[in-house]
Image (cartoon, rainbow, N blue to C red; front, side, top):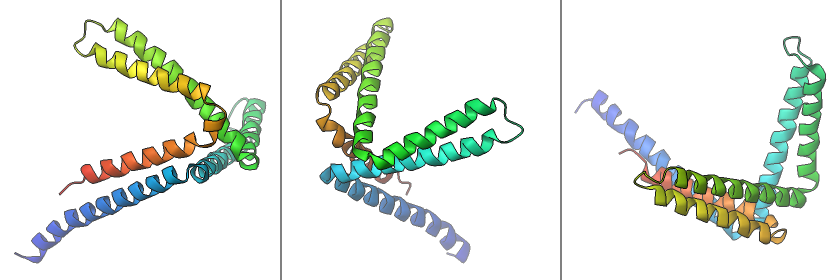
Amino acid sequence: MNAATDAAGAAPNKRMGASVLMGIVFIIAGTLAILSPLAATWAVTIIVGASLIVSGIARIIHAFSKSWGSFFLHLLLGLLYVAGGLGFWFSPLSAAVLLTVLLAWLLIVQGVGEIWLAFTAKPAKAWGWVLVAGVITLACGVWLVFRLPSLGLFMPGIFLGVSLIVEGWASLLMRRP
């Protein structure tokens, strides 16, 4: 073997090692988020708040540019983003409940949509799976609504943890040899 062949073989091994490391880190972080859902929820609300503030500031700056129409509308939207972000920062627990309420209603609407889609696609081979997904999604949304506000403090952190764990396993399973 020559140096070029060795270098070509080493590159995939480095990528595979990075993919495995990332997967393990995501799984550990997700597990920690599930084990400490209140802390994870707090982190989610702080990050969402920061995102809203940065987006609001960018919108306000852009409102003053000459290339953008509707100055007052964009200025108002930017101020609303900043105010919303500050609300997330100064009241993260209320913000967590708000996120959970939005998620619950999103699941309800999605579940109803999937059920409707299943019945409109009834001649299709796997329409029953779409119906099952819709019923489960709808049930999750209704369950969240009836468990508010107490679950609102924990669910964003738990969802973050589950998402990180799934992402970690996907990284491990999708690595390229």
